[in-house]
Image 1 (cartoon, rainbow, N blue to C red):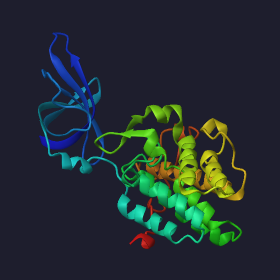
Image 2 (cartoon, rainbow, N blue to C red):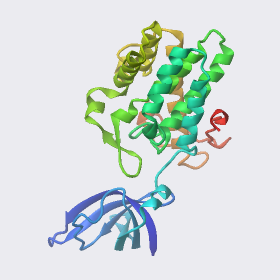
Image 3 (cartoon, rainbow, N blue to C red):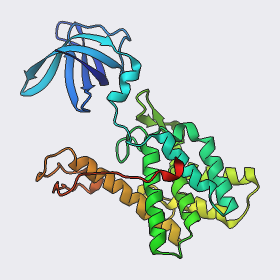
Image 4 (tube, rainbow, N blue to C red):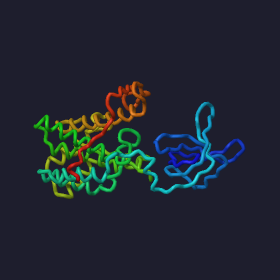
Length: 311
């Protein structure tokens, strides 16, 4: 059989006779992963992780597990990679414009100036970056999807509680994860492949607050609003064990932290239950307190974000 796939993992090994071979994990167009072997093969740098390849193979069983015996392997056009990588259903450029348009309509000139400047300075990465390495929204365009979801939930919360400062809350929501573009490294697939040195040593919460401080100084803004935005970014993980150096200390900061956690949890539950049939339980999900989840199947998992303001 012949098919196209993306190499997710690749290891160069030797068999018991000293012959080289490749041990690979391939991602098919259905996003499922398949382990395989390319016997008697010296790679010499020809193939690496995230390459899209055309493969000829047979299916075999080894020690009770299914694997592919790959008999031919060659490069496929790079643009095919989009067929094998999980991505947001919303175009990142459109989502960015929708959020920017909300900011352009702010009545508070200081929030508007700070948020607009940071967004535009990081625009290229914001439009395509994932929101995480392995957990929620770890997909191409996941950062904008996560941000837009929180912004929409924040706007609806403001309708229920009119005392919320809408522009403060939206400013914090838009900027809360902006420094993930500093924290993470992406591969040619567009997914996160690890963390930068700065990401490990500083992290996106502290760096995001630094962006606000630096931008405010550049714009000549010295009001307390700068401190409020910094606090929202620093506190949005809620508690020290999740990385926040300080807990939320005013209403909008608490709402942002809660909505951030809620959106991440909904994504994780939908992602986990979407892989199993109706009426079944998932394996234990370590990211959700090691809980099993039940797929009741009463309604399909959908993610809808209103992008009308950006079109």
